Length: 92
View 1: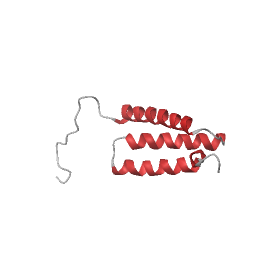
View 2 (view 1 turned 45 degrees about the horizontal axis):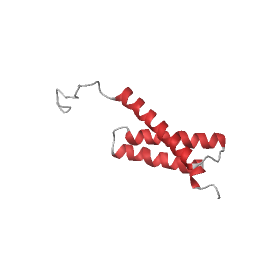
View 3 (view 1 turned 90 degrees about the vertical axis):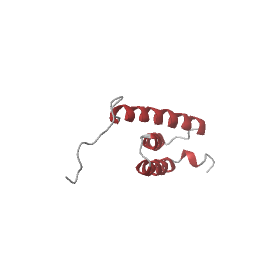
View 4 (view 1 turned 60 degrees about the vertical axis):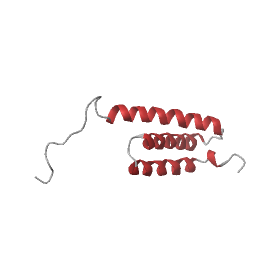
């Protein structure tokens, strides 16, 4: 294990799973963006079987996480200045 544990695809996949669970506990697309980035790095390592260096993997992870977060925020956020209000009670 001379390369380090960060070159193992399943480590990144496990991190993606943990970050996805954290998103359920604290929603806001931040952890989901990180989870998507980690899953993409896991897929990259699985497909390439590569021995990528840690700085490059972290750069790829950061870039993909940022792109995923921006995309999620743009697709699923409320329009600017709009607040979610409820006019009636669900029990009525």
